[in-house]
Structure formats: C-alpha cells, structure tokens
Length: 88
Image (cartoon, rainbow, N blue to C red; front, side, top):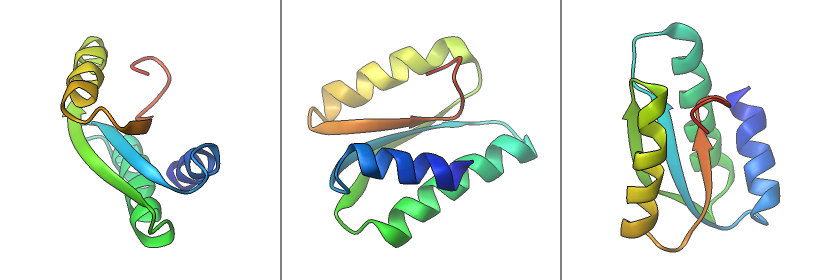
C-alpha cells in the first residue's frame, strides 16, 4: 500500500514538487511497513520529488497540527502522505 500511495501522489503531482511525510510513530509492523515503503519509493523512483518535512504522530488527533506546521515551515509543499485515512 505504501508503494501504491507513492505512485498515486507522484501522478497527482506530475512527479515533481515538495512532499510532507506524516507517519505513524508507533511500533506497529503494518503501518511501519506501509509508511517506510512510501518514503523508499518516492526517494528511489521520483528524483524531482523531495520529502521536505517528516514527522510522526502517536495519536490521530495530532496529525492536523503536524500538517499545519509543515505548511507554515514549507509553504511550497504540494502533497502529503499520511499513514491512513482517519488522521488524513
């Protein structure tokens, strides 16, 4: 799923631009695999895309504030990866 998310975001961003990576900051195998796969695929396959901000969340309610801070610090972010739909 992380690979698919990377491919979908790359397509939506025309394979270029700045990305925010918001991952699940917990020792949970499934989300860790998905989150890390997204990052690895972006870095390996999309040289014109750059993850400019990355931060984990432990509670879903924190993701909105993390995204807002990323946008303030990196106003050119064109897309985000978030671990799953609820925090997104």
